[in-house]
Length: 111
Image (cartoon, rainbow, N blue to C red; front, side):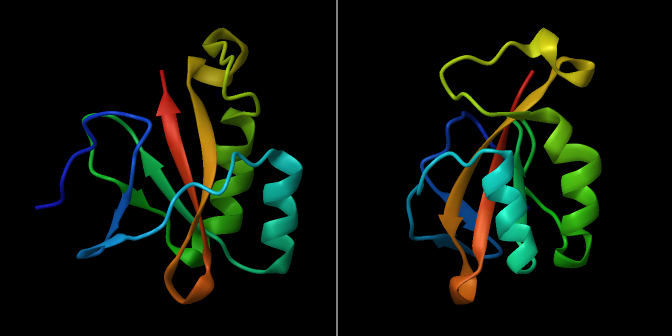
């Protein structure tokens, strides 16, 4: 059984059966993520307190970005006004190093 997220911000990411030994490399804005997606697939991982981490399949990353992540992306980690986002929830994105050098974008959900 997968471990549930107990608090955000996360200090590490558990992927499959191991922890990514990496740290945040910053908080990307929408344009940075768009540029990353132009270069190839990106692994998205969603963290919501009370739920296990949710990995988005690589083949779904572009659709997930357009329909779910982009409209809810908070670009200022210091000020997130939930009422300005659809359905009053937002994601704060951070970049982590993934397997085989593939970037991982962790989306921490605020609601």
